[in-house]
Image (cartoon, rainbow, N blue to C red):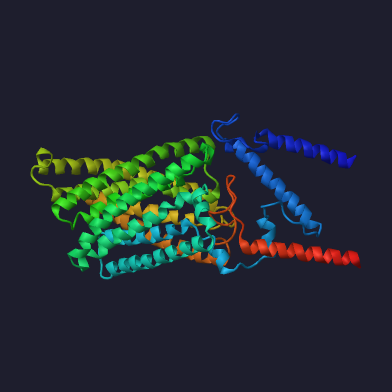
Length: 493
């Protein structure tokens, strides 16, 4: 009776799985993956994700049961159990590790450039402080070159990963990190380089500013359009990382504020107007996504522990906007002609007053998001072992550098020494955080927590299956072949 009972249970389980599936051209697949317009299409919900997790757990349980019988059997077509295979394979060729060098590594250069930006903004200077900022700036250029070389090697060696990186539901969100890193380097050049060189660099940065502005618009709108065209999203799956594609626009304003200090009057005014426009677009896009994030917290509680570092991304939009608006308002007073908007001096004074008080609001909102994000990690800190490292840990650094520069800008606008001292304390905190995260990243590479199959942002997720690593496929086939040969030999004996 037992075999019949097992068959009956298997049939009931299969019927439960098909309850969340639709048939399309004879193939069953989840309803949330149905093309819009097909019969049975609906927006995915939390039950869909629960069914998917339950199926994955069932598959893992069956595979572990089969492995315990000391028989090596080939996996299903196109599917590998990486959890079991990791126990067999302890090393990967460097080429296979390069396969997993994802766009998220550009968050490292974002954070490093952000540290150089913060050091430049410190109001209380001492001998050697500028040199420290230059060291971070130059080191960031080295890291950026390494990132470009490594991800180019990934796409050259494994061409299929280029398209996969744009289609992956998580990795594509970090593609704009490359643009943000480039923009951060331009800001650092304007800060540390122009004063030490001739006017040629000033003219070059003026051209690069508009190039970066165009690149930011294309990257931001392009990634959002790609997201909305290829997948349906639920509020349950929402994280602040959805704000990330707006980040290229959010650093245009701070760059405009810095560059306008050294440009001729006409060029400076154009840069201020362009920077204010793009900064407003980026902040308003992020502000609309804020609403979804708050709704998600109200209805679904805090994100999973591994996703909580991304909550600090919500600090960045307000912080960058405060630093940008206050900086551009200050630069406007030096670059308007008497006839600007009828009365140039009056227009610049009104702009500065509005910017100061509006900036105070946004600075407070950034602090609120900082407190919420930090508080959300309290329960994680009390857990044994915490949670594994991921490149999103740099969210502890880069968004908070925006808040630090905003704090310095508010302290300058209101002539508050106390606020500036608070900004200096925060500067020490973000620099310490950078060293901790950078050290954890190096340890994670050594311990195979990143640059390893199914360990990074290119892992299988949300119905997306990463292409199989070639070396692991060959090794698995060799294991299966050897096992088959041994079984035949034992049968002949």
